[in-house]
Length: 190
Image (cartoon, rainbow, N blue to C red; front, side, top):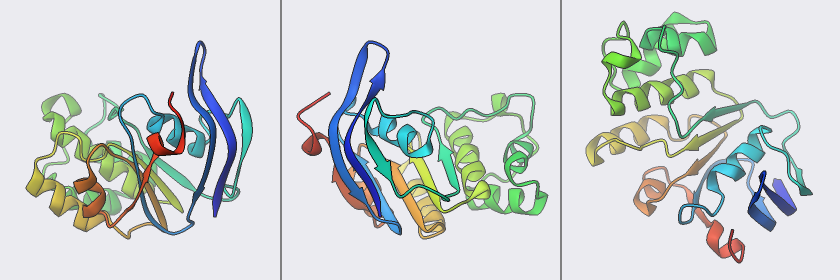
């Protein structure tokens, strides 16, 4: 169990999470939902260890290998799609496998030659290839049409012990079989 106790966090000049108490399971899929500005991305950054709480504590993360799919694709423009995935797993076959799962058939293209949705899928392939005990996915289906979202969700769900997604759409949570946690109901506001 991952426990956040009285966690307050934010950025210089802006508090985003205030006195948050939350329990997350060690297994399964959890979808964080709330309007923009309620701290979904901030919470993912806390769980990844990229941001520390101003106050409060987070327990249950020790020893977890974590992969993070950021809200921005963060692809390396000087590497092909395949090399962008391979760089995290050092395994060309695994990189090709995850690109195929994301329906990227030509891994030799560079990011600037890919559509926004294709870039998103390369970023997701990279996260899946890295793997780990906990996958943090920030808007993983952004820019994908409904049919593609459904196919991709089917291929990635249950591929990690724990997946925590930040989503805006309950339908995306349902595709992943995720328990929904409404951050806007956990706090009084940002």
